[in-house]
Image 1 (cartoon, chains in turn green, cyan):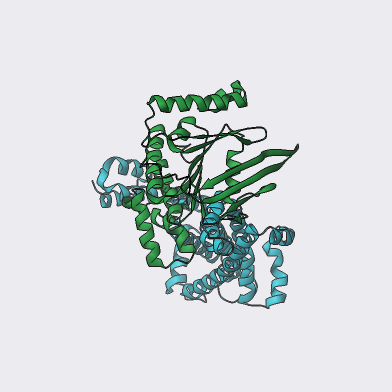
Image 2: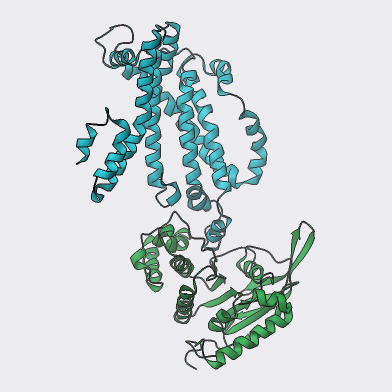
Length: 269
Length: 292
């Protein structure tokens, strides 16, 4: 199919190998992740799906290098990941834009501080600012933007930094439904045109089925990977189609059966 | 009805003015109208105080405190001369200039040392553990208590005054900078890290701008302490300066001279705070809640 970039022959870009994570809490050690294995190939769009407390955000933060695995390893192109780096760009739920920089300066922040020539920085910035449709807002400060616009800046900021993997931690969780679905569409468009690799954390089954080719279902106590579901619906995906709903029902069932019906119903939308 | 019209009525009918402005000025002139309204509201209390002062001096018949008119004459003589023609006539520029030099000398030293030190203490736990006990020990000591030592260290003269002003301005600047750095959202450091801006680069790119609102608070506090301490600083036997004039006025029982010095320090401190506020508004234009 034309609209499927995924190719089984694509090279492995990131490997998560038997990762375990303990947190030191006041009442002793808490096991947040146990025996997590995942191989990410170039061009994958992966959704980590699970209820609150299943460790999906922790796993993403370990991949980003903000936290270290207690046991096991994360390797990128075969090299161990031990600190954050521009090859793994992160988009946070609360945007984390630099409030003292304009839209243009936020998007140019990465290249500028990595010593890229200022002319190249300007060109890259313009390109990605246009890609997320914010050229008209180039000189605005973050506090003058809506939530959806802020998240577009955050995405462009990572893209302009020439990232290999886009890590997204519930990026659309704070947005209203309309903005959210608009941004989902735009993200898929960006993913297809840039041939990026995306790891996207969400607790919404619908969002996962909408976006991913691989949905990784996680369960809690301790956090682990429950199963992987391949989504090969054609894009753009239709939320109302029977195939979409069949997958959504199927995944929702898998989630709720593993985390207890009462907790599952509350945590999964 | 326009602003100049109402302006002429400010003095006689103070309480009425703000309301009249709000009603009379049409929407296109709103910014200037609001500005005028703010100024009008601000001068009500000082004018009332002047009136109360005048009446109190007249009714009690005291000879210890001069009337506002007496002080106004003294101020004129102090600034331009031609009335008393004594040692203080027309000496305002020299006293003013000496004091400004000392205040800003001490203040700038405090800023130049306090801001970088605060940035580092806020960001480096080791340095914080190393310096925090010492700083906490020095902080509660009143600056006036340093007076004898500063005269021993720096001798009789302007350097002792600058040192005291420095001490007074240093702690507000340092503590506010540390506070500013510690309250920076951790996410911003994570964002900088993952974008490839790390280590020492982060000081200029993230720590300094993110802490800037607090730093400006510290600078404004520090500047006001600097003006407070100039009187103490100029007790150290310097012949010129507004603080020295006030001390002389006390010794000579010239209360009009004392009050003149007080008013000039008040006005200058006010103006210097306005300058800092304007700078703060310019550098913090990205921050809606710091746009005062």
